[in-house]
Figure 1 (cartoon, rainbow over the protein chains, first blue to last red):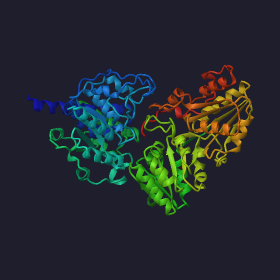
Figure 2 (figure 1 turned 135 degrees about the vertical axis):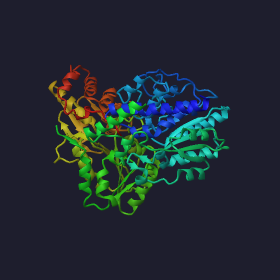
Figure 3 (figure 1 turned 120 degrees about the horizontal axis):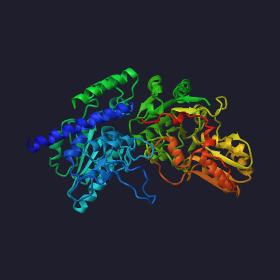
Figure 4 (figure 1 turned 45 degrees about the horizontal axis):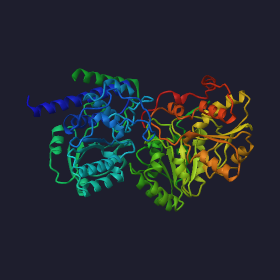
Length: 305
Length: 335
């Protein structure tokens, strides 16, 4: 097997395992953020296995309990430690859609940065594995639960790294709903103005938000057109095509910030989720029968993977 | 104790029926703020603004200028943090009739620091023209609409959602700038607000059995803070005053009481219970109320400190008078 085939096989395997573990957790939990797992499995697998140049995790495999917030004089453990040490040639990962915490934690497990037992801490009292990630949560460097703030912070990091002569990139994962907030466009304006081509953004364009399909809440039009008009290098791709991510990641954007617009299917790999449209944001079972059908779908997936 | 499930859903629909001037604006949290059915009932008066709060404030201001009364429904944090400048300059300064319904006040959500409104009262109290209400039960969630609508200017309401107790009789609606006297006594005065009142009721019922006479008031109007009932209760107290609030001890109920006492030259001890100038984190409501000292036993400790004596009350004594247990059941997860 040559190296090229090797990485794609690995990323596909990790993505399949993210879906499987995520689906299993959601079944055990009697509901949860399943559509986000379906849509983002490939991009998270790609980022951690191929896209990002990260060192090994420096954090404990089983996340430590919550000890306090920054500024209280106590040691504060950053969730960024799960993404490895900081270094001039290493990449950084800024995770923006904090309600994708579950897929992020599952991805950390599948790439060996967190122990499977860590998932048992999800949304438990006193845990750092929070429902909505904060910067002490595994994999998170920024407290981004008030959406659309992280891109600006990533911009600051990218600007500072360029001043310091770092060669590593700043990777950002976002969701398309965040492009409804004005701050996102202020951030893009600044990234383009400062020609920050060391920033690479991958957006889960699933066209969904909490209240339902974005089209029914607040349509945002073509992200590709808008971002390019703002001076970014933005390209629509199939959101589950890891080779397309890679081609873009390797592209010389000539001074422009890269936006990989991953047009995803929020039910990808879990066909039964189609029955829940238009309400995909958070899976709730309406009856025991419905839960049984999902369990059957999970069992079939477990057989396959 | 009656537990009421999602009282706002139907109450708001019914209340809006004969008020065509009432419009609703949301920021992608319609069902989370219990107006999904309102949207389906009055689709022509419902405007989703997307996750775009700064613009939403301006749009609400514009509609208010044209004679409508916008009821913004979103989480409290997203009303006063991100769009504060727009709120202050487009709505508060022109004194427009916009109703800001802030859900998830204080530490009632596992959503963590980004979803917990712990300094909202402080910021809104410092905002000229703003009126502030803090609801404590189903009766107040239902009756605050009339109280708010009577105010000729912007109103911020800390709103409860989901299952909640009915602590106050349905036929005793909330009254503007009037605290509820829940217990009469003169050893000490306790002032509480929001979900903390329910905890305080448990503590006070046990305190009374230990020979401590408590004047306990529930405060639902936080601005203006000129209620003579509150002033009288503070004056009467022999040993001092305790405030307990679902908020930072800076700028909220405790600060308002301190200002009132200072302005009236009332030299008595004051203990402010609440978040001690710190951010919280994501966990269940009961866990956080215990961690940050907003539960019944924390109030008992405050009373012991104020009276400078031990009352021999433990957690078990308080458990026996648990007023309701609905909030401690299944952990809330989805936002």
